[in-house]
Length: 436
Image (cartoon, rainbow, N blue to C red; front, side, top):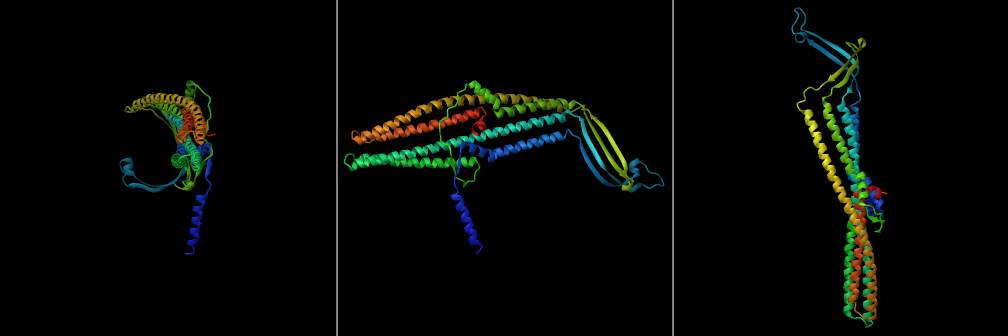
């Protein structure tokens, strides 16, 4: 019992340390770096590259001589009648048992086998394809993290805007209550201001919950400890980008998109398979040999050896070569079609991202102007209400207009940031743009 009480205190202390640990504050590049380091999909893609490199080493080893050492003792007893087909009268039917001791090396080496060379070249290209697949996974992982981070930024901006609206509603409620107390305002004005204040508090609760859940999603993408709290170090801001034509963006995308590199590698492998199928009809030349110390006893062993050149010429393959060639030709046509489809899809992504980026840039300009005008409307409505020339219906309307303008501004900034990310993904530059 005395041993359990300290253990409980230790566990409670660990739990308290987890709960009171400072939150992890991340900038967008830091979040991307964490994702690329410990995201499971990225780790699996890295392992895929390592596996393809080992496959390439195995294919290369088949081109090199293979040498084995052996040491053995053999017991022999031979039936002479079965060995030569008849027996000798007066002689024993068998010979032995006798023992043979031997030790040495044997080897084999391919001297001319184009299929082995093609297999090695194919494995090298497969490694390139694995690296392209890894780049695709990394780009997709960065896109997901950036999109989630931008969503968290939008949620944080919503919370800040909601908090600002609560403070404004509180000030307007206090103003209406003071006017009523001084006999200038009416009870209905105070009631309207109070209703507006409660509505703004409710919106703040909803926005705070949305921010919290968005941060949970970001932590999940980063594969962080579920108990680790995170905070955003970057705020949503407007970063203008240099305009470029669709032709320039498409040229960048066709050079950088890893999906196209992966399809190109697959096409080269199919072309190698086509050539390799035709070369199946070529002769294959190899060298096989052995050098041994052999004898009936270890002390009587003498060197023995054997070398053999072997040539194998396929004469009839039962249609296997034709089928392999046809299969490779079909694969080449299929990959070309997939490449064309991928290029069309990339062109659509680039043009769509450019159009959305240009539209979002204009939206930000209009939204900023809308916020400035809405603030002026609120100030003028408050002054009119304070002067007693209008009730607070104008103030409430101005508040709603300011809230809508603020929401429009946040949404425009988010759409602009997301459009920048979509364009970076479309041209294959996600890690280059957001990983620095």
